[in-house]
Length: 331
Image (cartoon, rainbow, N blue to C red; front, side, top):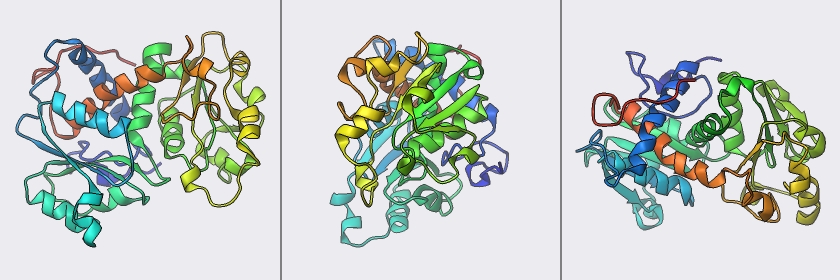
């Protein structure tokens, strides 16, 4: 896979995080290992390190978000950055200002990092192609395209609870067709050499020729869950659907919703994940979401450390030299 050179500076250092596709394995490991060193920050009485002191981070979210926007804000503040949350509906974009003009005006206020979520695929790439060298972009999800930071925090969660990725069979279940999370996770898992990546969905919710992404596709959930180590559930992206892609929500839950009985087909120590927001009784049964095999809430917690690591690395900080604790698991 050709590397997206827009993501790297002239010295080969990560400058923007726009997509997982094409990132070297070592770059993913650097982010995950750096995140390990930030976990203990959240356990301190004073949850701050001075890596980004004096820097300004703008959260530019054109789509609704709870976990992603909030964890980015917490992560930036724990790195001692100044954080601005821009509400597009209350900004000049609602008066017809273009996305690039909005960004250029915020650049003029000495913003160093933009965290961008947008309904249009490719929005973060567009911004990254037009910002000066000292400005950095993190893609927090663009349309149906990609969601790289979610994939990284999910990898971190898997590694923390199940050990090396190379030994694991991972099943991603649900609306694969519309899911930016699924695309990023498939690339990330394959880059780190997962033993097998499976996608499970009705045919109407599987992309054409999905196997070319390096996965095994299943339309029978029971067959697809057999012997897996990790189950990642996805919600139905009803806001992105055009036409009737499922016959009914009840039938979808019966066939593809994760219940205790279906989870019993996976390995006994399998973990259950979900990027949120969950649709209980549609994607997943509450007994599973709140059960002993669920790591859904730890995913959210780990997201802070992973997003701290991403911002620290692309802004040129080193957690070993500027106030973060040393250490971290190696893959």
